[in-house]
Image 1 (cartoon, rainbow, N blue to C red):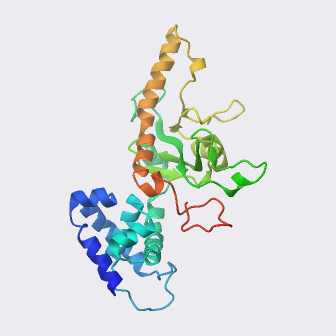
Image 2: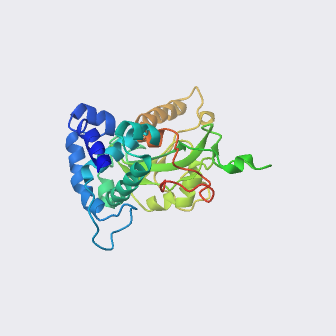
Image 3: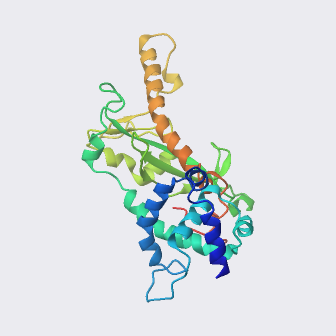
Length: 305
C-alpha cells in the first residue's frame, strides 16, 4: 500500500547513516540491527491491535525493521502526531498502531533485562568506590525523579489539592525511583507514583531496605532517603550525606564529614547521569502528552510503567 511505501522510503533515507541514526533514534546502526534481530520474533506474533495472534492472518508488507525505526524515532524526538503524519505521509492513527505494537514487542525484551542481580554479581562491586572506608561496601545507588505530565482534574475540584503536583520540583507529573549499579545499569525501577509522593515513601512502599537486610553489601542515596531509622532493629549497610546542621565548621570530625559528603556525591552522580540519559528520550524528558493521571476520564495511550 502507499502508506507502507511512504514509511519505508522515509526510514531508508536515514537508517544507514551512523551519525544520523544515533541522533535520531539514540542507537548506532549495529546496535539497531541487533535490536531488530532480538525483537522481530515478538513483533511478528502480534496483531495490529497488539494482541497475540490466535490464527494465521495476512502478513502486512511493513517490515519489523521499519516499524522499530519509526517507533524509536518517535520516542527519541517525540513529535506530535500531526507533524509526523505530514513528514511521513502516514496517518497518525496508523502510526499509533505501529507504536503500540512495537512497544508491546519490546516489553518482552525489557522485562528480561530489567532484573535484580544475584548476590555474587553484586559482591563483585564491593570496593569499587574505595578499597577501605565507609563506602567500601556500597554497590548500588538510588534516587527518584519526576516525569513531567498534565494536571490531575482534581486540581479544579473545590477544596482539593492536586496529588500530581510536586512541591519540590514545582511541576506536575509522576515520581519514579531507580536503583543503578556503579556503571550506570538500571537494576530496578518503581512503578509510578503521584508527583507529590516522596522518594522515601516509594522506598517504604516497595520495602527496599528488606532487599539489603543481612547482606554484606549496601546502598547509597541522597538526603531524601532514610534506610536506617532509629527504631529499626536490624541495620543495613547504607550511606547518605550528612546534613549541614550535623557538620560544624571547626573540628576534625566535621572535616571528615565534609570529605565523606564530597566523596559520596562524586560517586552518587552516576544515578543522576542515568536520569540524564533517560530524559534524552523526549518521550520521558518532555511533557508526556500520551499519559493522563485521570485514566477513568481520559484513557492513556500506553502503560506508563
